[in-house]
Length: 318
Image 1 (cartoon, rainbow, N blue to C red):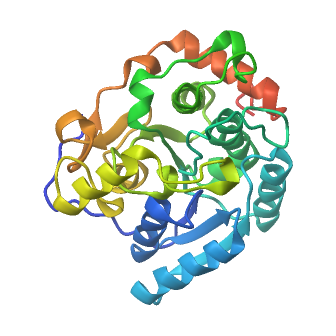
Image 2 (cartoon, rainbow, N blue to C red):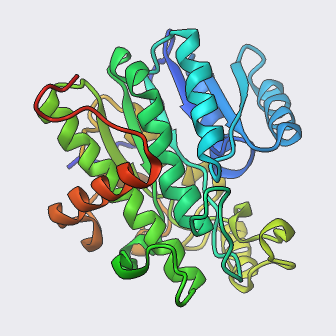
């Protein structure tokens, strides 16, 4: 396992192109800033252009030479994902780093994506699956590292195989946990298939622990009219440096997974403190729901079918 190295920092990324979803605020903005500060050109696909422009302005105040580009992306729409893929493929430039970081968390009532999927499963998981598929030629050209951001809730999550879209009975946290387990299983299967097919892409997973980000804040657009109850406690602990992290420290596991030369495919990175809630980044043992290889292969097949985005076969790798 990757050891915790005091003073770890992002290596030089000059000449690299990175794509980071969910980079308009919170942990995603910190990830984008750190990658840009290390010399990478960072593509920031965002749903809200105004928030994206504000994030770029903030990053450039801290790093005036940052190379940042906004693109449009709504992960809850497969058409939007396909459009971004077409735009980036038309630019014909290799992608060296992809961080699947964006997410929506626990709408109080069940909501659907533009394609009819439960919002969290459709956005957090299927949207990122489709993005990987549409960008795969560029990822292969860049021999990319793909890092998918999970959550501490992944540890207790499970796939609701009989009702993936939570149409019969909706539990917001259960649906969120499923979306993260599904994304993690897909990411691990991506690494396995890349190795078997010679795609040249490595894929791993990370989680940020707990920190006061916008995931649990007031979000009228998803039906949350006030901060989630646990948000106040997380914010207070973070200010005091107790147990949980800050957005700056919570970004480190994904940054390590995506950029550290010693970080490998099929591995899991997270905070090393008690309960994995905070602390320096390190390689961690895979959460139990992420271990069954049969589940990883099954979610791959289901996701490929639901998104209508085909991946190369293992026979040819082409």
